[in-house]
Image 1 (tube, rainbow, N blue to C red):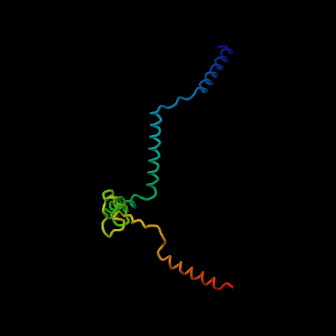
Image 2: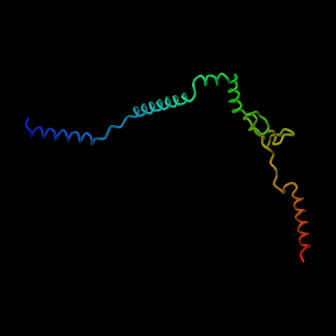
Image 3: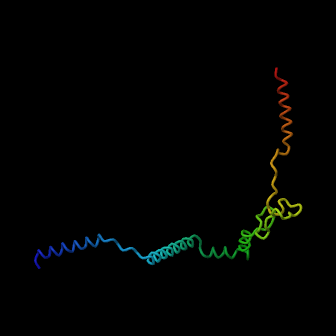
Length: 146
């Protein structure tokens, strides 16, 4: 091979490499992206598990689990999810609200729904004492003026 041919081959190879570099990279398919995402989530999950397990030795975790009285957490979860029906608690869906046609139970504020009966708007109780004091003070102040 002559030097001229070697130069031409080298130039062509450089041109081919430049053209290959200029081509856009193929986009991953949906399945490839989902697989990569799933692998990443699994990797993150394993990392978090290792981190969570590194804070406390397994024997300490087992001792804490053994110290819990039987059924205690079940009771906590039940108390959190179910209202007890005491006054002031949110009524359960089975209790229902007292409607216009319903008759409220006797001696239960708000008819047993957990809501207090509405108080009508008006002067506050005992405000007449304050009014009387203000009127008396006004009369006293006016009598002192020359």
